[in-house]
Length: 240
Image (cartoon, rainbow, N blue to C red; front, side, top):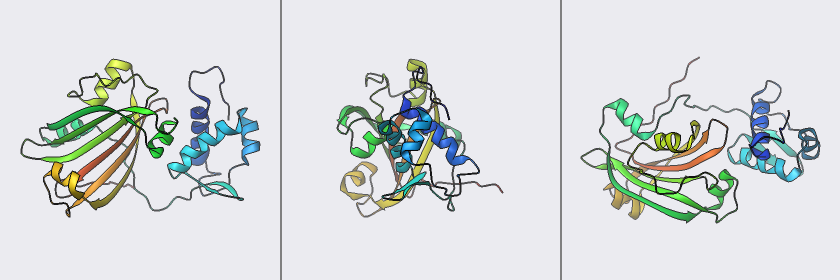
């Protein structure tokens, strides 16, 4: 449990990585309480505010559970399924032999909502480059993506987003995406998404949130995909 104060990686991200390793250790992975913040910050030689920033992110991701007056413990592992290998949308479609068509593409600057600001470790209302794309096959659109990019990264909004996104990040800026954490849930389309996806407002859609990190553990992209339920099936494979 060592923090490198000479590193260019922010202290709270280094603390996050140490806590992630702690969470996966045999001692902690079944729900053990973490040391008190005062003790842990002393062990890591960082301030309590820096430690709290790291813990807040892991609470947000569901890896830690904090209870007032009790402390912070590792979240017990439930019956969950995950995906070890993942691809960009363009790569997924290419593997399925489906040609990708962009129906809409908008780039703007928007204030980050609290959840997004927390993920990036920035102040609420910090402006982010936002990429919105309506995509599908040549016959009809079936997914609307909204991507927020970490404002600490050099993404300007002037990039050619008709090219595969992660190729742009790697070739232009040396940002290599490594990890994607996902949440998937269902909801009704509503008027705005229904108009875009050419369905009824009362039709179901699947919402797929992606929290994307680079190979150094730095948050890169907060992505939300809204899929037509009749055109998207999410499959999981588990081995015992």
